Amino acid sequence: MAARRKKNTDHNADRLAIGEDLTIYHAASQKSQFIDALVAASGHLDIDLSGVAEIDTAGFQLLMLVKREARRLGKEARIVAHSEAVRELIDFYNVAAEFGDPLLIPAQDA
Image 1 (cartoon, rainbow, N blue to C red):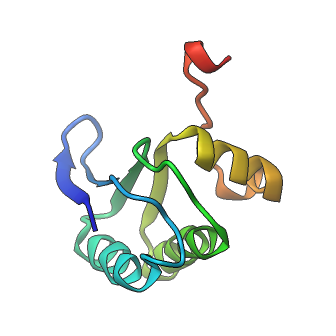
Image 2: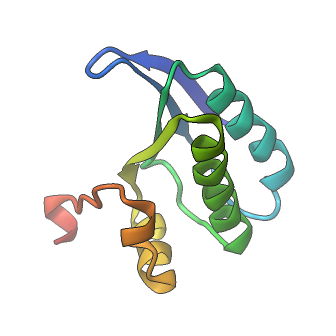
């Protein structure tokens, strides 16, 4: 999986940047990387999905899983950057409020 992990010093959170599609073709490897990043996070995990060109139901399920596991572990997982594909899927499933992450739309897309 094309993902990068680093410490976000702005608010003491770990950051996971996903650089490939969140689809059924990558779901098995992505699941373990999401969970590993969440377990290793100090308390907050920021997930950057700005590089995701395609997301399907399997990808959506991974996002729901990481949110649920974060709550179970007493941590917070936040989506901090949404690609257009991710914004469309969140809108389609009408889960923006449930996810609770600010859904920022770049000026060129507005």
